[in-house]
Length: 557
Image 1 (tube, rainbow, N blue to C red):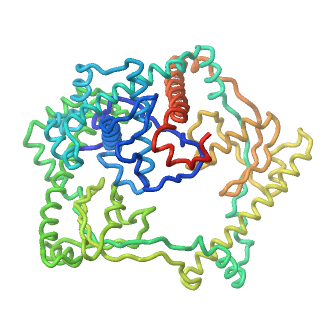
Image 2 (image 1 turned 135 degrees about the vertical axis):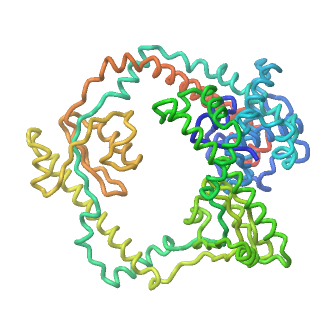
Image 3 (image 1 turned 30 degrees about the vertical axis):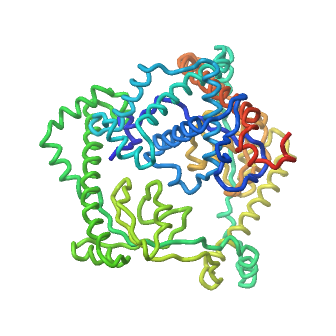
């Protein structure tokens, strides 16, 4: 059908380059009290915005516009395939779009026909293979019609996207008024580096001193029963058509065409900048070649999976066992997943979006799903069983409970030790060395690489973004020559000694400041627009069913 790639910029879906607007819970902090789930109107009463009645046509246009926006931004998935997407979320998005486009209309913001045609053609081109535009009638037939949408809905979506972009500029332009001096000050704040030492208090260092008496472990299990509850789970059997098995055939097929010319055309159109990992044109073309072969192989795998699925699905009577029976006839391997919950998915392969909802809907009477297209294979699935939520008895999970008990006790010891050592450091003269005090206490201090607020990673911290943010906060709130207090976290905790703050590299700042200023202004523009939208929603959506469902009468101010 349509392709959705994120690894290569030349394969991205280009949807006007518009930043998706994400609003906070703009109707306040009250609970959702509306009955009827996603119902947002009673009969034909959709409410009013800016004193103007919302028509059924306007409501439908906003809803289909949002649905298409979601589809384009979610790799070809619809909102109802996302188990976390509720009717209430849909209602909020639709009414917000209605408000935004009503404001644009009041301000005289429109999209010209030529701009709409150009943008629509750009979207259709980005959806095709080998950079050939997908015909509009194919988009209508395969994507829109199954959802009750038309070519006019696609055109409306494109127009809405262009209007949104213009409104962001109009409303948010005040945020662009950032002076070079203000940007320079922000750059210095973000890029000034700190030289520091750190000592970690890891629970793993205290595990050996933690005993685990049977009665203590049993009491711990009783106290934390809820943490051991297993959610509802499913198992599926599946046949995988691995893309690796089709690469050679795909390469041979493409080699019989003007493959080299296609690769050159893609490279010429997008240039080397679209392939940041490639050091030479030859390496960039090699990336293009690999991606095109893999995409062709995935198409071939999908075709073979379709043929297999037809044989399975058409067998009578319909039973889950039919998958294994047909697979045996065709010499294909059948695998069975371990039980998995909706929050994690199967361990055996990477599940694509929408997979969880599909498999949790399987039953012995409707046992099949697929073809399911993943990044590495195409899968045909069959129901294999459902396991209800349960709390396993202690004897079944004793080793896990014992580990949890010991880890919790070791964490408490790490926190106690860290807190006591922080008190010791606070009472020492400033000229007493941090490192020597750590060594005397049997601890191992580390010298950190210089870092700033803009630092994205430190090898000493692993890949924990939360720990990095905690470290930055401690570093830039602790005076030079002082130690932080003991900073606790799930990994135990740390104490930081700030040695010095280093001067900003002026040459590097002068070189990077123009780009930094442009990004700073863009961020301010979007921030200003979002602030406006949240404030407007609080005022202007009060006369809609969404607001009346959001609050009981006594909560409305």
